[in-house]
Image (tube, rainbow, N blue to C red):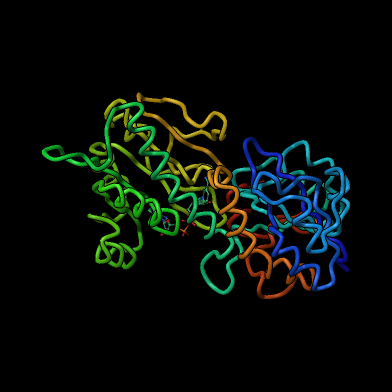
Length: 351
Ligand SMILES: NC(=O)c1ccc[n+]([C@@H]2O[C@H](COP(=O)([O-])OP(=O)(O)OC[C@H]3O[C@@H](n4cnc5c(N)ncnc54)[C@H](O)[C@@H]3O)[C@@H](O)[C@H]2O)c1
């Protein structure tokens, strides 16, 4: 039976989000749970210890004190220094992205942690705990892409009188891709949306969110990427390792100083030349093209992101504390009793 819920301070590079804001903590406390928050854990997102004490949280001094809770709810996948706290039967609720994290998966399995992932929870439809952060990351991708394009190639997305606008290609027009396209359109770029879902492309084209649409195939992507100034990768097959849709050859065909943003990097990346980068060292250059492959983009907007994440997570956290077999947690369980129980995750890792 779950009595205590722990919320540790995030430890990933540059990460300033917190999994539960004071309103989410108030909800859990009034439902009868003891919520233990690590001292100053909310500061990065603008929430003080006093804000949490007011809603009935217990502030504890160390990460170890938090991880002794029956259920631990955090934002990002546990970092290696946190694996020492794993133990049999611990219930964990967080972004895990296990298809791209074989070592973490092994650790969760070997300690017998019951690991529930935000990003694969699929009730009632879509991915309701991934969506809020995809929304933030998509908007940020347009901003970061525009910034690095200016920095490296001196190109302004919207062009100017007598000068053509920049060409942006977004691959994967789900939540993140749509917000990235909206951001780039807001800066008056030409935006081509690429997806396998033609109905989705039709809708977005009619709405004016994209200026052109393209059915996804390696050949078609190659043609548009060669002409693009900025490419944003946001394709996802839930739970699985991201499909490699943009090849090294495609990237090499881009003009020097062009930019790729691989949002799908948390699932292994949908661009062949990508590798994970951090908020403190976000870009590298390969084939003359700037790569922005930060795995925790929403971490740079901690106030907005923590509130958006909390609002989505809080009701499901209560479900998880009361009944982990609830249908409202469909798709979330990734590792249980030493086994990978999510099919797409298991297929991607093939241990
Ligand atoms: N880097 C970060 O900080 C960060 C933050 C949030 C989300 N993300 C990631 O962004 C990615 C997208 O998330 P989302 O919430 O938008 O997912 P989503 O499910 O809403 O959208 C994914 C889209 O990809 C499309 N797709 C699948 N296969 C494709 C293919 N072969 N070609 C073209 N399109 C294809 C789907 O049809 C869908 O429209 C995920 O990997 C997610 O984890 C990253």
